[in-house]
Length: 126
Image (cartoon, rainbow, N blue to C red; front, side, top):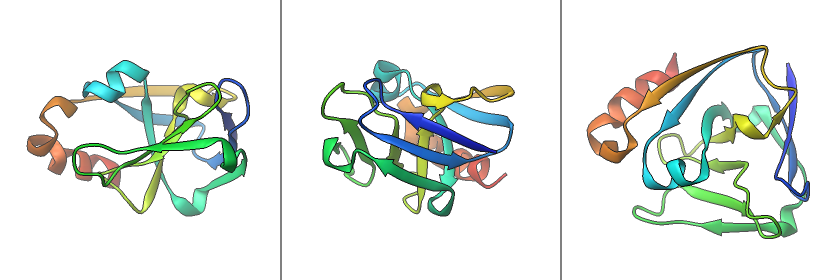
């Protein structure tokens, strides 16, 4: 299924291919908790930025591997390149339309990322 997604103001918008029944991850690390991000990691080939490249601001911290993309207009982080899968795109399910037919949310302990990174890698391969 093809979903459309965007930031709040619509400046950054994209398409992503994913199943109708989506299993996503909710992380309890500081940035994910503060932004309310629900993670759906897809291969880059299943993501297409349609517009707003000039509105994107990039933020990195800690290891600087993850590339957190925010809309410079409204501040919403609708997708980013994750540390756990730098060859993929992590889409915020809360920014998708239509909403997935069925959504299963799995918790991930990102506060202890190093300890649980192996679990995350196993999860993202399933």
